[in-house]
Length: 500
Image (cartoon, rainbow, N blue to C red; front, side, top):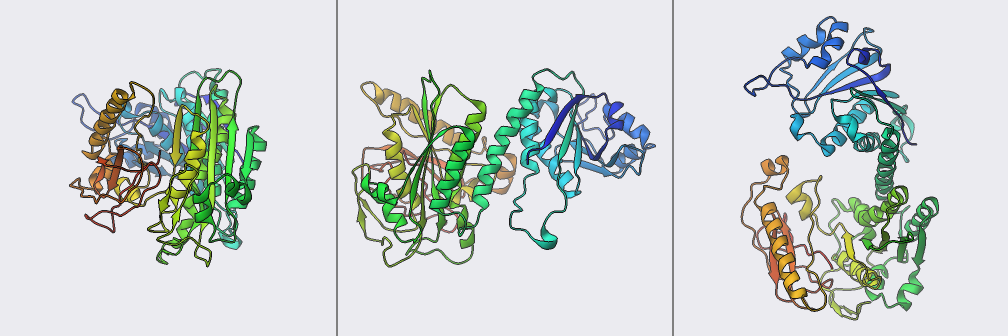
């Protein structure tokens, strides 16, 4: 259920009277004339401190509170405020606090309230944050999310945050209500994707995923098309057939579309939908296999995206395509050494049945290409090396070289050079977040060239323990690759090729 979010103007003295189970106050980092960190309270906190008899100032001095990012002070007002719990949250330097930081602050405030078993939350926003109400509403909805569908008994939550008051120091604009509504709609789409990904494999399989996608389409007012196993075979999607034939759960291909009148651009999103990945005959080790229910997260993302698209109503034609299958071992499963055709007309030699993602995506991307889009974006959980290299809060982006008529060679070189520069900046750590830079020392990455068949040279990104580098592989196929790994550290690195 969506939060009830109210936005109101409130001065620092009025914040004392905000009634809520938890009151969270966001403050910027303080500094003196020389730029050094200053301990103590910001001016806006003085009315709260006065109501608390100076207890807040003493706590800030003892904890050496400066307002640096993620620094907190927690205090029980003991009836001196209208709130039952007070949390002062540091946002860091004001100049470096943007939309992303304010979204994260709102999410953390919501999680603090959830941890306190609160039903109501009041958030005092810092100066200037009233222009970022959409991002703050997103953060609140994302922060209160919990997947509790299967919890029973004492584990089932007894309470949840239901209402939030956002107190702004500046004037609230008439557009504030719209900004909050859009933020909640976008966050609801993200949480829908989370719900789909968190469902167990015995509940969410290709057929039930397709049914969920049809429900999203009906609620959002977008068109839906679902191809069953018979139609997949009739259309020649032999790679989806190969991956899904080892399971009693037949594969599906889901296609949702948003086609507004007057749209001049067409974008296609393709998401990998392996609802459970055992590895097939090249079976995965037992530890961690339960997490393979999340191997359909790419498909969940693109289907949930259509919910947000319907809320935002862009003047762009948007398609979401999700090839769904279970990769299971069976007497009819595809085998290492098999050679399969594809919708694209090319053949593929199967070396490892645990490289199923690029197979289903190959047919899905060929299907997407037939729509003649201006842009294709695919979203997939293709390798754990991305998490090792970047952490759980980042995703790798691997651009593809453009194809086209005369003059495209020059454009291809320009795009390739631009992509290479971006990847080099990424590799050197300047584009990495500080936590990743601290955790992972950058160093050399050696990779082994895979066995491939297919079209001319493409720029691919090789990601591993030490970041991502660009590499030219003589003849990498757009989708039909044999993944061989790397020599540097097989347990922590892998070659990763984005399919186009």
